[in-house]
Image (cartoon, rainbow, N blue to C red; front, side, top):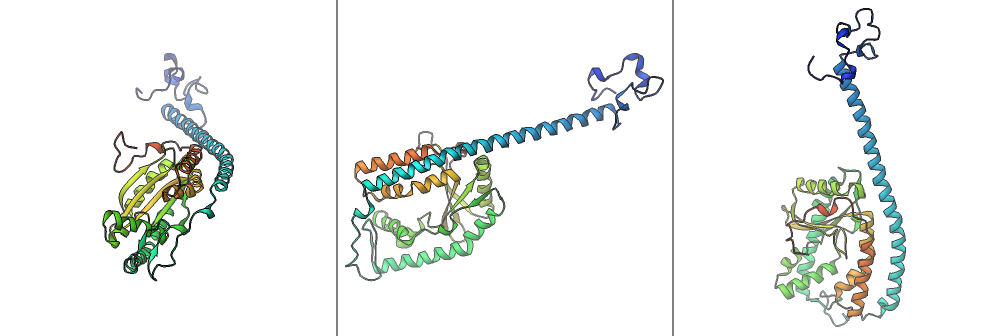
Length: 325
């Protein structure tokens, strides 16, 4: 009788030791075995404990879920106001710097089959033809291999989804701008330059705030299970110009690189809202004052993006040094 003893209050006195099973004149109410359900006192005590524990755990999970839902709803309501204000700010920016006043690119004297970008990058007909052929292979790889794999991963968790899948292929003009830089400044061949455009194919997973961290970690594992190799992961949740996680992958069967971003609804909408500002800064066509305005706009929008619990703890790959930014 020495193991799993109930509390002393449930143990009969020494004088009633022979009546624990309900025997004798006082047996009708003398022991715990007389309760509904029967069974040894120790087992009954354990059953009651686990039943109470299950109720407590269930209640705690319910409260935690309710708190997370309340936080997410409050963040969404705050973001709605921020989004309206930010769109107004962008309208004011465009009044000051109207897009139509920017000089257009003159392609009137370029030979047929060549390409010229907005930054005046130029590919002659032969080089442009080689880049076009490589871009055709990217389209085939996306259609036949990578997108089917990403959809298969998406189907494994109904609590998040791929967003913007119709835009997973980068525009050819933007690819060629990067190719031009690779050829001009890094002395790469056209094929090498195209292969180094890591986001020619790109995807975005969008999560609920409360499930973001565990969802991202699970999807990284699923991408690896598909045979893709992780080249780089950058966690930008601590940055002031952009919040989210960007990762770069390679399909070892084809050598094709692609990008996967991990966002919440709000961080994705913030990225979309600041995209034109980012593109304008990237073009290097803005003067110093306009750049300050654009950077301030991005910082204002990004500051209002709520950070999911644990998101900042997801490690970079390769891990950045302590003094790296």
